[in-house]
Image (cartoon, rainbow, N blue to C red):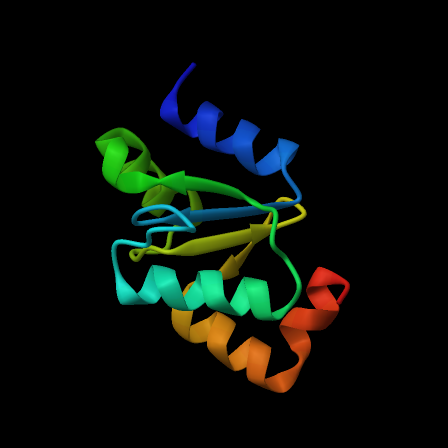
Length: 102
């Protein structure tokens, strides 16, 4: 399976997927920590996360998959939603809660 196939499979099989630096319990960057906090504030405590620091191929592959240069990246229902700044704005406006069904 190619890296793109692995990513496609992860995004398709999980409702909420976060590609991040570190893990939800131990984020390795402030932007990743911000997204985890936003998800938890929306009542999403269970989600599939991928630590891109553990796999350089996934780290590069996810940037190509979404054509988005930065990490973290959030996917909901198979669709790319955005990174930390976009998710912060969506949370403040209530749009993210609606997308997540909260």
